[in-house]
Image 1 (cartoon, helix red, strand yellow):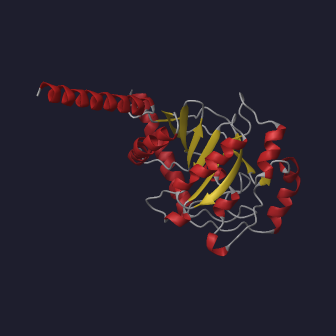
Image 2 (image 1 turned 180 degrees about the vertical axis):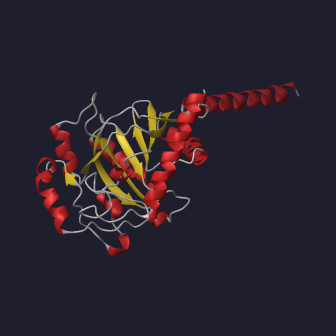
Image 3 (image 1 turned 45 degrees about the vertical axis):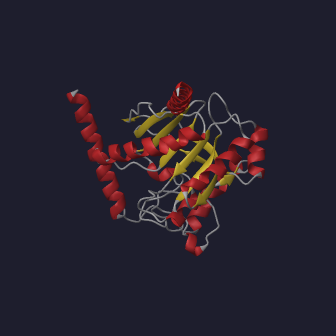
Amino acid sequence: METDVALLLGIIAVLILLLLTLLGFLGYCGLFAPIDIKAEKPPFQELKVAYKFSRGSYKNSGALFTEAHSIAPTLKCIGVYYDDPNEVDVPRLRYLVGVVLNDTDRPATKEVKEQLEAEGFKTASFPAVDHAVTTVFPFRGSVSVMIAVARVYPKLREYIKEKLLCARPLMEIYEDERVLFVCPLSKQDEFYVEEATEDPEEGATSDPGTTTASEEDHAEDGEDEDEEEEEPSSPPTSQPVSSNGNGNGNGANGNHEESDHERGSRSSTTSSFEELRLETASN
């Protein structure tokens, strides 16, 4: 009898130890980490990235992250997600994955750029912004990413809805031990690469707004002439878009009137900034 009790107590002790170990590991990965969401200037200037664009479930982005990291393990990885999966069908979800080329501490070498180009990565530039919804979360591997999906995304969505902000797209920048989440509140159109403006049902394949890593320095001279000769393709959704920061979604000459969505987005963002200023002043 005493042997059975001792055995039972031993099993319970082992289970408790395993549970504590699991909780400790999950805590290390961010399960209990505080999430502080702010509307502020993000901690970076213009971003130059090498990327691959894709459509479909965001769960499939992991393969692109693995590919980008294997080619450039010292560079920061970046993911940009253009659509809300609660509002857009899975096959039409748009996203890109890549690496940051112009990080101050870890700039990309010529050899890495050439290898990225050889593997089919394109380049794009995202502008510096003064206003964005931001937060950070611990990054200790894939478990941290799964926890972030469950914890960070709902809080970001709640904050944006509560403040009546127009914040898009969602960006993830992976640093050594943390993930920086950024939703721009200004210059949003300039974060849309050319592929994101194409209708997949039409099978468009031209990418006038993007270049390969080695072609980048030579593309700017002829880009303005190309824009004058043909109109950019229409976006698949009502969101305004641009061609890698060189267009504004209003056509080659910029003479078309703004859509209702653009006016609504700008109005929402303006009123939200005013509310944020009032809150800051009252505190």
